[in-house]
Amino acid sequence: MANAKIIEIKAQHVAEVSSKIAKAQSVILFDYRGLTVGQVTELRNEMRKAGIEYIVLKNSIVERAAKQDGIDERIHDFLKGPTAYAFGYDDAVAPAKILKDTIKKLKKCELKGGIVNGKVFNAEEVNTLADLPSREQLIARLLGSMMSPISGLAVALDQIAKKRSEGAAE
Image: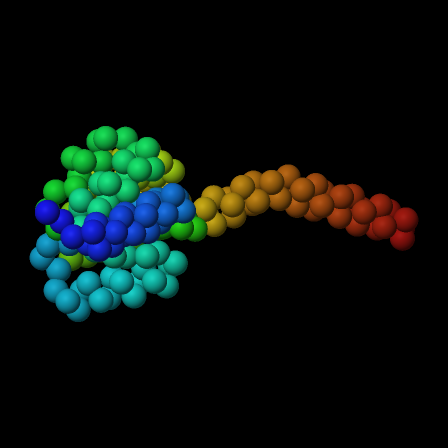
């Protein structure tokens, strides 16, 4: 029979992971087999700079936390074997991008799937997510397209003003 302290500790771990899943915009599941300690350290540092939390958790704890948060049962399919988790709190796309780039560079590991805004994604869908531009890039594109007509109008008005001032000078 399990010790009451152990059950309490596990319940705390489940609550912590549940909280992380609820706060995160995305959680990407990653099979890290084949990576050296140095490569994992480099990956962790890169993720930390991007505001992503990279941790290795017990699959059973994550499964219980996901069930507690009402996450689709399909997540169970991805919780087999060694799994690392990348929690993206600020940007849903950043963890997928960094992991996809790492996989391309090292050719050793693979994406398993993920949870994006409470929905379960398979590895193919996570790869598609990784190909999307970041939030900042999308905002910059939107602002650029909004500014284009305004700047065109400003140039046209400036040209009209120059012609009128040249006509008045003659």
